[in-house]
Length: 379
Image 1 (cartoon, one colour):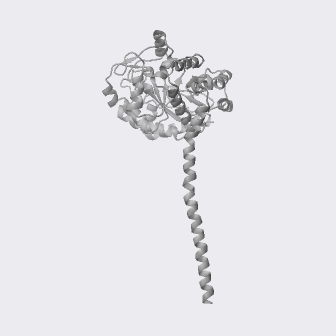
Image 2 (image 1 turned 120 degrees about the vertical axis):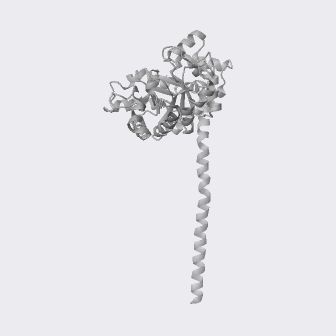
Image 3 (image 1 turned 180 degrees about the horizontal axis):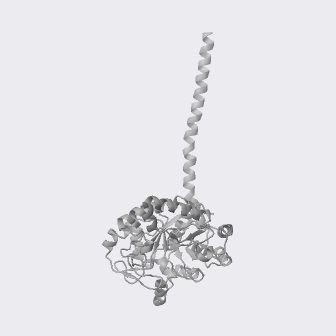
């Protein structure tokens, strides 16, 4: 009887040992498969870039203005393989919510690499969603009004709700928040800012960025390196006489805060910053982009402000140069409102002449595709 009990005990020990050994094997093998998956992500993008033609890669650099003509834009997204499109009032007019969503879905289908679809939804005076079928009568208060009403808590709530509304309707990027600080209420940009000092604006920016990006919508800070009290660049040149050291202590604070919050994009203004480069707008200035990349260590997407604005069209006429080529030479990744029909061949010619390297193009395309992957729109 004692012998039988002893045998049973030995059997139990053997079974238990085998079970534990099996579990240990499973635990060891699990991290290997996870690490493999993590390594594959950048490889997917590298392979995609290698398979793309030069025309397709250059097409990815264009963030086209939508003309409001849906059929024409659908054709252009497909033909030029554009990186993104920006929606304006005509894109929302005379469309039901279901019709609008259908059009956004078709834009994505027309793109081989996924399409960034953006709009200017700052709230207040710049609110593309206002009075559209998407808003359903909802008001979109300015950052200043929200801050007065409920501080950063209200800012966070509003940005989350707006981002959710955008994503639900196929928009995956918001050209917001505004990181500029204007000291004079009469300044062009003042009403679009938080209306507070540099430090308080630097506290506001991470709250807005994180709220927007928590809903899988890319946030874009604007307008680097800080608009200040400059006049409107929609109509022509604007200059700021301010030392670089003062810029670093003041205007750059909100941008640094946004970078630390892992903001997806930063838009560069067309203002001429005399202390950086006195003859070129910031958007076309290599020194401005070096400040952003090297000094601020920013690795995300750099986007030009609208290249159809007066300051840039005027500069193009005066310099007799293609502004799309100049914008890439300065270090931008995405050309907002660039003329892709004439710009793509001009950029190809600049590459052929060695004025722009294909290596630089590949770096920009990689940043663009990485964001598309993060937003779950990369094909």
